[in-house]
Image (cartoon, rainbow, N blue to C red):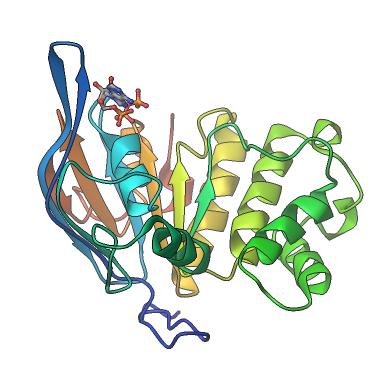
Length: 250
Ligand SMILES: Nc1ncnc2c1ncn2[C@@H]1O[C@H](COP(=O)(O)OP(=O)(O)OP(=O)(O)O)[C@@H](O)[C@H]1O
């Protein structure tokens, strides 16, 4: 197992560092200020399976969007792989995003008009990787769908679609994988298979950040960051130690 920091082969940067200092993200809607995140300090420098846990509205997606350079904070500093996102231009943020992070969503978000292989190749293309088609086929095989490359999303089960989505994220080669409720639309058994796949990525050197409201998922994390009303209220290993996937129930 390799828990050391992944090094970006193209830039030499230690790609797994995520640094948030005094980060606030406030939304102003009319007279109301929604403090989605307030004075958040978070540092992740390990290749690990990190679960961000919190109830609906606690700020999980807001946090993921900031870490993924999809959104900018109201105040505070965010650095990704050592680069300050808050002072970066929009073009720089795009470049950092392409080389550092990948995304997996609750509802899979595959392109319906593309085959499974083409969806995965898209990930490699966006990140500017060479031999994208060959790479896409290899990654599809890695997630157990080597035979399904010509199939479209509607010909795949939910769990298979999520595997393709994870393959698309892996095909980028980027060191940080961000997943928003990746098991939210799956039955328990399929959800555990997806968690197993995500855990395996962390064990092979990636930083995997999963946000969820499902406390059970946090039991298999290396590190659990609990959010409540926009604040981090707990940060550490799961209470009672890390459980095995076979111990989960939900
Ligand atoms: N664009 C926006 N405009 C106004 N308020 C917003 C916006 N985006 C998020 N919020 C508010 O910020 C708070 C945090 O939202 P966020 O989506 O991050 O929570 P969450 O923990 O991901 O919730 P859920 O589990 O329901 O997805 C909520 O009160 C939400 O209504």
